[in-house]
Structures are given as structure tokens and as C-alpha cells.
Image (tube, rainbow, N blue to C red; front, side):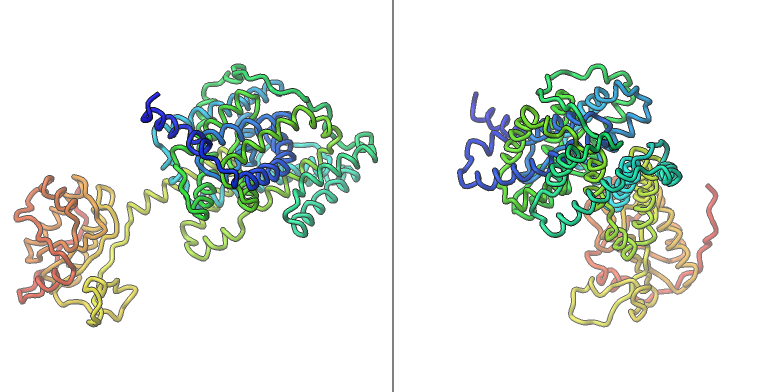
Length: 580
């Protein structure tokens, strides 16, 4: 194989880039990181398998597959990919909504992981890494917080030992409240002790894998106190055999579930993972490739599907663990995978007797930190009318419609906000400050925000802050017509076009009609700071009646100076709505 071909293969398989030059100096940090992640992911694997509705061993299989797949194809040195709460909840909601029979849940979850993985890989090959940009920060704050609340409410029956119900978050919460008289006392005690222990260990000994310690102690207590005979549900008979690789063909009964559900899971996995990967990369001074991250996550999930796991993504908490452990390369994932292999083969019988309330406690304490109260406060302080409302829509969308429905509502709301912001960009009149030696364009500001600034007699200076296209061109035209009608002394309009990159045909025609209408009453329109691209568009489109073309000036100051020459004023324009 030629050197060029080797480089192309290595680009698609990043392990071939870092493995040949692996340094012994990186080994201690990678070993420490792999061991620490194993201690954290082992109890989480069982917990998130329960959350997804999969058997406990599926959590181990998913953790093993994800660690290996991402180590080969991912570009982040610190990311820990494996079982996680959000994809587990989304997958569970998809399966529940599809009415999958209980005996087919595991294979359907594996099929969904495979579908999501294939779509992620296709997205990487097509270079669709930018797609996560359409999930704004407010959407993620609301969506993830909503998922966390939904999961906590869903775990209350396991914590209290009451019957689990169906419905949205509020319905399930109300059903649990109506069963408080039936709470099993020993179940409640186990739950309270487990949650308190997890919180205290996390507070007093943050470097100790608290979940693993609590799980181990609860297994011992379960056997000593014989909790199973006291009515507490416990795990039994975990298999100690490795999964046999196979395609989960039995789960592909519904193509709409695999296509739509796989796409939703792929979007959630990438949106949750890429932000963590880029944050850690910036902190340590290297780059991740978004398109290759799609392939890395896709490979992890394809392998999860083949090994009878469920959908996985990057865990923020576990990735923070690798960061603190001082890992240097993705080799830490292979260390974790090796330890999980040993766990499956030799240690899984040790988990027999694990109380289900403890599993629920691990889930609740892990996911409670995802309720981003600080994020909501920040959004409320910065933009309570748009971003905060968008976050709340995403939050209540999840609570009322489930994870998938909530994500759909949030994405639609986000796109609507994008359309509204494009449709109604800021149109402001600019005034000039007193000369101060600053850049001549920097002294022009909105008179609404700076009422002390001066207007130039006879000249209207307007800034349109956005792309000019068919949906918003009328807004600019009406604003200018209205101002000219209000002030009959105006003889020139300076349009600050620095923020207008392009126009479409409809907008060019609207602008042309405006210029022609103003010229008939002695008001000239000129452009300031227009881009060459905008001028090129206007030249090619040649709006009807726009002859001569608009005069362009390099600065606002130059345009104002040219338009300030003495001249007769115009008359008010008719601003009544024009017939369509």
C-alpha cells in the first residue's frame, strides 16, 4: 500500500495515527484513566441498561463495544463513550411508543443502536458535522433538564417499591403519589441509605468511585440481611459469557422506527457528545474533527448493536474523570474495555443480589446533576423573551410528550426562532457622536440606545442587521417610507449595508421599487460599507427601474458627507399599504 493510501486510511481510522507513535510516558495516565472509568461505568452500565429496558448484561456489552469502537475511530483523547442516560431514555421511549412486546425489547434496542450508528457514519462521510449547530444551547439546557426530571420521576416506583405506571411525566408522578400508602418500608430505607451514601461519598471523597463502593456494599448487605425474602427486588443470574456478534435482524420489524428513531438517537448522541469533546480539546490544546466524531460515535453504536447492547454516547461525568486522571491518548478506552471483558467473564456473578432500589439510586444521583438550574437562571437574565422561553418549551415538551416528542418540539421551536429572527432583523436609525478621533464609522450608533447622538439634517442613516431576502425586505422598505413620510426635509437615505451579505431577487426588486419611489420625490438612496458580493448581486439582478444604479461609499461618514450638500427637500410619501 502506498504512503498516500496509508494516510487516507489513517485519516478514517485515527488509531493508526496515534498508536504507532505511542509513548511510554502516556501509559500511567491512560492506565489510571481506564481503571477509573471502569470503576464508574460498571455500576452505570447496569443502571442505564435498566433505564433503557434492557437486561443488565446488555449494559456491560454496550460499555465494552462503545469503548472499543470509539478508541479506534474517535479523535478526542479524553472522551468516554458508553452507556448514558439520555440515549437510554430516548431509546426506551421509542420502544414503548412503538408497542414492542417485552420479549423483543432487547433485540429492538440493539437494532436501534445499529441504525443510529449507521446514520452517524453516513453523516460523517457526508460531512454533516455542522448539523449539531441547529440544536441551540437553550434547547439542550431545556431538553436535558427535562430528560433528567422525567428519569427521576420514572425511578420513584423502584425507589419506593410501588407499581410502575405509564403516561407522561406528570401522570406517572401523580400515580406514584397515590401509592404512597403502599410504600414498602424496607425498600424506602434501602433507597434513602443508598442515595445518602452516594451523595456523601461524592462530597467527602470525590476521587473515590462512590457508585461502585455503594453497589458492592449493597450486595453484601443484601445477602446478609436477605433483602430478597423481605420483598426487595434484586438482580440474579447475570450471564458470565461474552456476546456472540450477530445482526439484530429480529428488531427491524418497523422501518419507520428504525429510520425515524435511529435518526433521533443519532442526533441526540452527536449533540450531547460534540460539545464535551470540543471543550476538553480546547482545554488541552488539540483539535477534534466533528465529521470524524460522527464516524467514531457511529462505529461505537454499530458495534453495540452487533454485540446486543443499546445506544451509547459520550458521558460528561466520565469524560471529566478521564481528564482528572491525566489521560494522554484514546488508549484509556481500550484499558476500560479490557477490564470490562474481565468483568463480564469472571466478575458478573458477584453482582447477583444487587438490590434494584440501589440501581435506581445510582441513576437518580447520576442524572440529578443534569438539571441545569444555573443554565435556566443565566438564560432568564440574558434573554428571557426568546432563549429562556425556548428552554422552557424544550423542558415541558419532554415532560408532556416524552424524550423523543420533547426533542421534536424543541427542534421545531428552535427553527421557528431562527426564522423569526431572520424575518425581523434589527432596523435602526443611526446618529453620530461628537468627533473623538475614533474610527469614523465607530461614532455612528443607534439613536434609540444613544439619544444624545446627533442626526444629520436632511439625511436618514439606517442600518439593516441581517440578510435581505424575500421575507424581510418589505420590513426595511416600510421603515424607510415611514420615516420619509414623517420628515419631509429628508433628501437622502444612507443604507448601512455592512451586515447585508446578499439579497435575493424578491428583495432586490423591493429595494429597486423603494429607490424609484423615493427618487420621484427628490430623495436619493445610497449604500455605505456594502460588500462587493452584495454589489455583484444587485448588478446581476438589475431591479426594474433602478437606473442609474445605487452609489456606493466605503464608509458611513463618506456617504453622509456626500449627501449633506444643499438641496431642496422632498414631500411626504404615501405610506399606505400597497396592493398585492
